Image 1 (cartoon, one colour):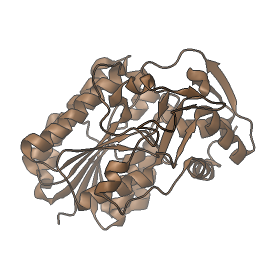
Image 2 (cartoon, helix red, strand yellow):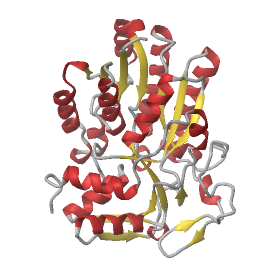
Image 3 (tube, one colour):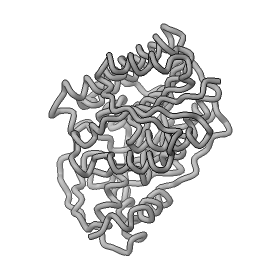
Length: 356
């Protein structure tokens, strides 16, 4: 089995978790990251701190390349040099914010859609047998989930218990004919292209449509990294702006460790052009109001919030993923973190950094 793993966005949340995980399995990891997150979100969002920590912790098993995924030539040279030694590709690099995408649509599409195509083609030319894992998003479903018959409760919106998707939305939901946000559309293009390379070229590709991906490795900023930013705001006593839906919008949250263990399962038994909704499901979810209550309990500090009436364009009012399909294919995998555990770990990891 080839022993090199290529990880794009290697200093980001899922990328860095992937680096540590696969290096821990004894594999050599090649990281591709040029800290575009700092460009997108400023100092809060920069991943430089995470890269420095990664290089120190992982040591010789990690090689870093400051390559932009929009640079076709740079990727071609990188993959040509690695050749058939590549046993796995995890593509995490992206512009991840739907608010930001509308500011620079070309940048968003070039990074998310064209960058993914550049990666797929480099893999097809040089290591087509390597499983290709893509971190997609539940935003490919656009605002269609908002047409569900939601019921308002005291702290959250909720689906009736007899609804087919009460236990989580599965992959049969349409991704068509709804409002996506510019970001959602660029991720749809990438998502479908990853599937296409699987079907058309018979490559082992897996699309993981994540809900709230989270963990202590998140460079939390207002426009991206919701749960980490909740905890950061409470700890630093920043005011958090809640956008719309009375703060009762529901998100399921999956810890980066649980997602990367799913990546390992796929790597060990890859399939062609698979699509999985990946999130915390019924095991790990919270509304914004509930998340702040939990964060306040953990820190002993009051949450400072400001309510903005208008919701974000294309934002989900209620999202809980069904992971049933993935669990059917990989029955040994299971979630280990729920929302309180995730927030507590963030608190412990950042108590010396995030101070009022």
